[in-house]
Image 1 (tube, helix red, strand yellow):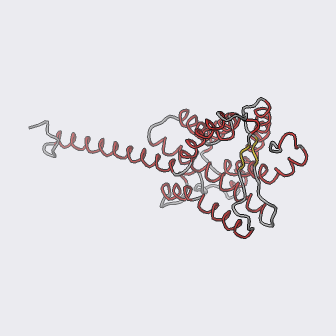
Image 2 (image 1 turned 60 degrees about the horizontal axis):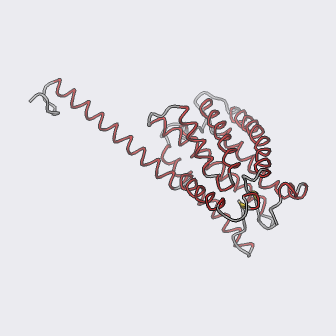
Image 3 (image 1 turned 135 degrees about the horizontal axis):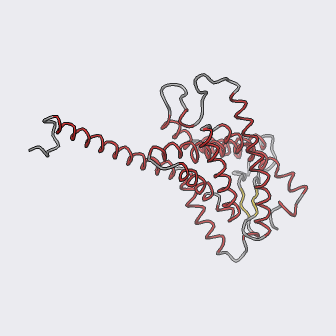
Length: 284
């Protein structure tokens, strides 16, 4: 029976091997899709769906978007010592999805995090880190200045809420906690929404343009709770960051850029409200 897929004659063995390889590849892609779905469900996919529901809830209120607020870093306890403990726990557990993708993409040989765009490539200089950090600062300036203009313009035309980067009380630990909060966001978004997503979608056969656009739309989706200006601005940021990652294949510039942007936003918010209350203060 020559058509049976059993290891008999040479042609039969070849067909059998081909079917086994095809079945294995199909199974591997299915597992990747499930893995991707699980990682996103534990991180920014869930945040995106929640933000979509949130914006629907916001636009159906009696008050306009411009009269609403979204607070990013708030106090978790009226007692300072417990507030600090809760903030630190939030930082640690907030990095759990990052630890998961590090575990999934870890390589036994250096650079261990090469598939996440981290680690020093063989033969490269240690000074490369300085250059990458420098590019991160350039990216921060390129995104931050127009992003601020988009935010203020979106508020002015009523399609964005007032974003309050921090409502933490003033303690000796307030600024360090805000810096850690910015780091958590930078590591999470750039390693999951960019590096991890790019690696997995490439293995699933998705083209570079579709990957960049998908990553940018995901980034925009979980910022929809801020309003439509936040969505547009973060999609634009996602397109720039996605292009940069596709071109360089390195995560550090993106992490540095994101971290700097959030530090300026979180730590500088009090000064912004003091100097320009009409633009940045929450509605009464």
